[in-house]
Image (cartoon, rainbow, N blue to C red; front, side, top):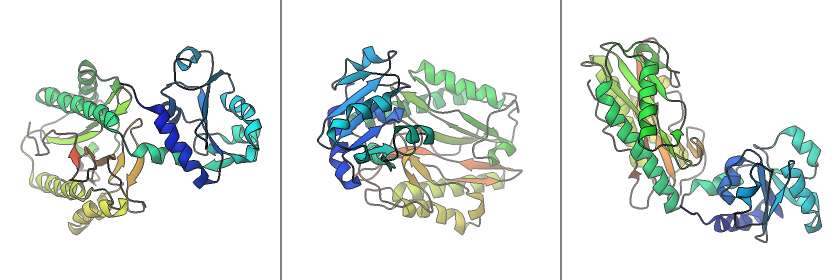
Length: 353
């Protein structure tokens, strides 16, 4: 699949005058890949407001870089080389840098006249084209199928680690590049820890088991969480599950172009708060997905901004009861003018295994 990288750089170039710079030095590896197609651990691209651009990388990646659609230079100090090559275009103080990607040491070495900027490329990346959405859709389909294939094998006596490995192995067999992130499996009382790392704790009858996992496919990520019950759930377990399912449904229905990030979070959070569990929902409602597993935009009580069309994003409320357990339900969806499109389609009914 070939992306129009020149069009992406043109969109970035058009935005630069609004940031008060004549060029942007892009050093984040993910952003370099987004703008050029080069995946590497040492590359940078200088994008000028006039639409021209130049890429720099070292000898490990120069062969691949020379096959791309923009001028390339070979250098170990990629940022320094690009800045040196641009001196004829204007003073260094007219060049923006990615504040979150550049170390203080590199910034001081390159020159104090550089302009630190934040989230310039990330905001462009938030809105996906249909090719990107196809890749995320495929990553989610792999994730769905892995869950369907592994669920019948879940049984008391299996450890959290063993279940995590089963999910990851099955995603690889179905075509995933790798897991999108470290798989979370949390059984029983461990379900009260939102980002619990799998242990040798064995699954037991009566446990709620939360699985948060996803596939990465051709660089793009999926994210899904399901909670199942080993044996018939108790009253409090069923009540907790139904509450989170109601909150998740409210959050999904609130997704729309033009909706505020804070308002979407509130749609789900208010359901939990009315049930008296506000203090047990301790994280934001969701986040964007794409070339990174967590990227713009983010949904939370203090988040600002509005959603746009074609933004893939998660909705993942959770309620966590210390010492007892918890429930989280998560889907990846994409905002659409006619209503959100659901990418992770595995049932959200409580599965009793």
